[in-house]
Image (cartoon, rainbow, N blue to C red; front, side):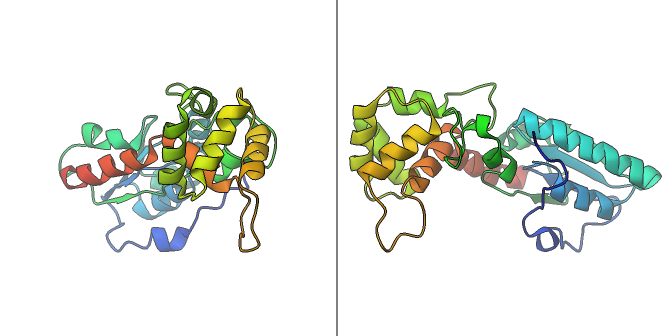
Length: 233
């Protein structure tokens, strides 16, 4: 069960400190999440402003809608127009009209909600399925990747997206241990193949989990597409 009131947006005041964020402005929250940033922006915009937000995570979208509806009840006629799109933010360039917005905010990466929900499979702090998709309606799961990718492909993606120097050793151990079906199982395999060293400050599996998450969700290409489209918005 997700606690709706626990979410604290990262660097909230710094992120929305925009002089132009005023009445009649049109602003985009590319990573809606639980609407922490969006709620703060909506308070600044006023009734003549417009907020457009994107998120591909259906669970986050449900909770964000609840939060924004509560804000609408609170602000009444001072609430700006809000338009939500439950798609990847890379599609913003196809949805938004050219030169139509005053600003865009993007808080890239995984959210605390996704980490904390065991069934999402983003974390090895609790044993859950190897899911990791931000949009569970499409794409391959982390379980499919670790069980179907070749050893070299696994090593390359762990090195590229996780900056893990022991990627070859880890990939070899994963392939030998197949099938791998849970987060705890994968974490144990990685830790055994690449034990924590005295200089380490993170769990040995952290970089491997990061790499799989980025790969499964095509996070870097999403960001690149959004960046390329920025001038068209």
